[in-house]
Image (tube, rainbow, N blue to C red; front, side, top):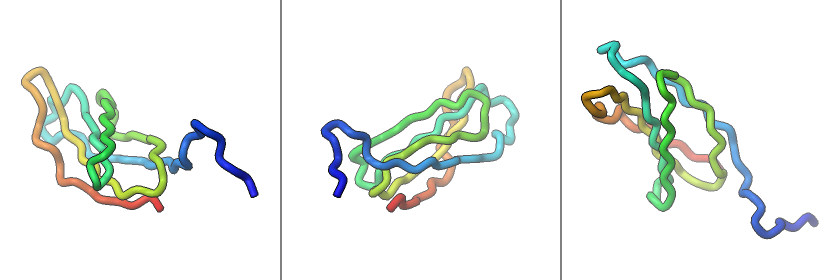
Length: 87
């Protein structure tokens, strides 16, 4: 039976997030925030003006994700969050 090597990465899964552009049309970019449901691990991804993000996340967790727009005036309120499991 194979054994995990010390320092080996946990098994991951590729996840795609897609969203509609800001209706105001003046977003300089977008930030996707992903955290484990336990809030033990947090990820922040700046996608620039792209409205699609593909990331590899560790399996064995429940996650919460949201996206927000930003421009020179600051950040928007986060969109409604989504919750998903990678088991």
